[in-house]
Image 1 (spheres, rainbow, N blue to C red):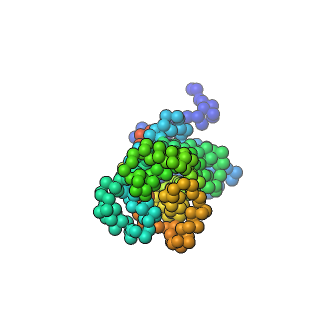
Image 2: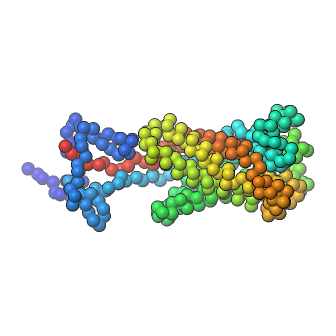
Image 3: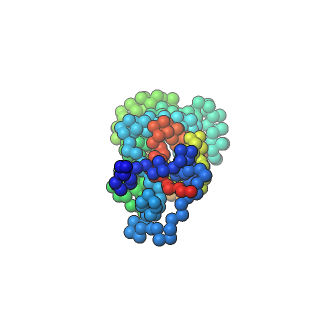
Length: 369
């Protein structure tokens, strides 16, 4: 009778040794394959490879941890990320434009408005309800660009940095760096849009103008460069916001899944975790980046050129340190709403190409009677 050589035996599928009535099934809670009704084989006390740390089993050396590997992403995957990001950002930012208008007015005229609710009521009473939608055009276009660039950019740079520096102790720094890098590219499109939005919200002469009219007027009267005056401040605000957003989202979501692994088994619960994690990330990011946002609003409110340090000094002299946090309540609510919505819509779209989650572990644990 022909008997295969040892290498041939080792190359065979070990599940062929099992009876036909018993087969491995995927356990989402344990994140591994198990065979119902069988107990795990207890390794001998000496059945460890001291050099590799592997468990020695009847099938040969076996790793002590499941093998996890993310599949490489194609150009079409990144394109899908861009579409998901564009949809998520444009929709969520458009839905909270009234909050953004009130927040901007609170920062621009802190002595005129008492708070979020009273400010919204006063603006509606003085200027009409539609005034709460001021600046909707630059908001839509600016964050359409933001979603197209920042989400695929983050996925790309995170994978790039983690592959170049495969050190788990540096993972937090690399995730922060990936978020910052992607945000820098996004800011070049957001900056002129944000400058126009603030003018349309705070300048009485521009509130009834279209976006094209505002761009033409600013370019003619003050020069095109004014649209990019706030780029440095915007970079500070958005980089801080983006770094915290992606970091808090990733780690809070991982914390929830580690605490309750069953939530990772269904798409519906995964999206729920994305929504909650996004809200926490948005709240954290708004607090960290609030001073830069206040300075940016004051800079774009001015006629002509404005500078970061000079504007910050003015706010400090006029209102004290608390002046940098004017409108924090409305902005925190605004950020929690849009970031939770963004990650929910983004992950809902990304799940269509199965890229949001890691591939299933490529290992079968050994179970014996």
